[in-house]
Length: 229
Length: 229
Image 1 (tube, rainbow over the protein chains, first blue to last red):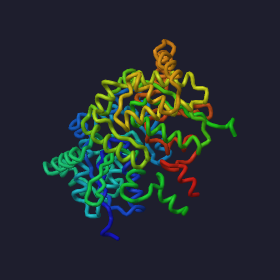
Image 2 (cartoon, one colour):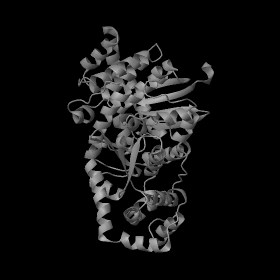
Image 3 (cartoon, chains in turn cyan, red):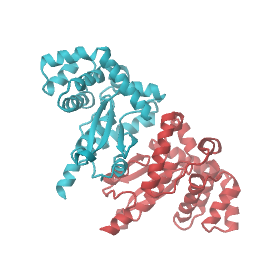
Image 4 (cartoon, one colour):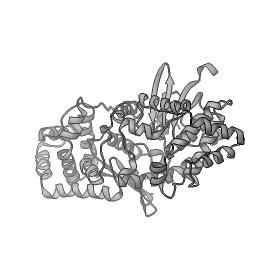
């Protein structure tokens, strides 16, 4: 069965709340669908600039709706998403460049098949999109990494690695790859199906994506649904 | 049971392909969910301007994705949606002002509880978003109305009525009402639930909307799904 698993790449940035939803849903479905999920930390700022796109928050009615939408999705998806007190500062002034470089470094060193990059990503989202905490300073990145059990010496090495050309270039390369797939925001999923690459944007096409890879959408908490069957 | 039916208002414009999807899905679910669907023809151009929003098509990657997304949705939703040969001309140069005024006139005269406005709306979508035909000229509007069985004399009256201040103002008023609900595009649904008004934008929140009104999302073809039960 391993050989027939469909590869799904998930491009995400921890500054993006819809990326968090996409990430958790894909992590839940990884155990339900016959897929091989590849985590692809990317840089949303670079994607918006590269695609010539503007954040939805610049239109006041869109910003208001997004807040309402996120609070509905928090409940329905069961993800503890709470906007930071100053979303503009958190998203556009402070941003996520150091956090995403740190995640690329974690993934580079990760021997356990993306387990650590998954855990640290979740921890960073929890900081910015649940606890209204910083994700830009080295101390913040250290705290997130400690939270999931990385050692002081590993963290020191990861922080240094984050600032190398190697890691900076790797994040640029992944971001460019997302743009080449047609990204104009995040999250973005690329499903490899019968030699074709099918791109899905956002956190509202799971049902369609399931259909595309020959699987079934079972709602936001698939393990509860399958337990009922 | 009539008294407990929840009112769902659907604001739409026939120039918008996602409005067509929203319209057909809501028409299908009207027979499945315990709702009272109110059709609210509005003017997308006025909403974009009023909200300070720009069409997604101005970002090249968004435009490409929208085309892909619509072709997937055509198949999955079973709606014969085909982009016109020149979507920019059809959507932004020719637009839908005369078509939406005509629909408001049809609704004004409709004695059959929105049956005619439903049929003429569908016919106009079919023209622009399936058959690459005009929807701006009086002859085009007449053809659409004839197609669903309106008489020559009714059509003549409706075309005259379309150009009255009464009808122009009515379309403006509905468009403003949509903006006041927080619209920044179409389709938009407003669910009246326990004295509260819950606004949903676009054609990708049906599952969440179902949850909000205490109903179940059964996929894009609910009557097939319920027939199987």
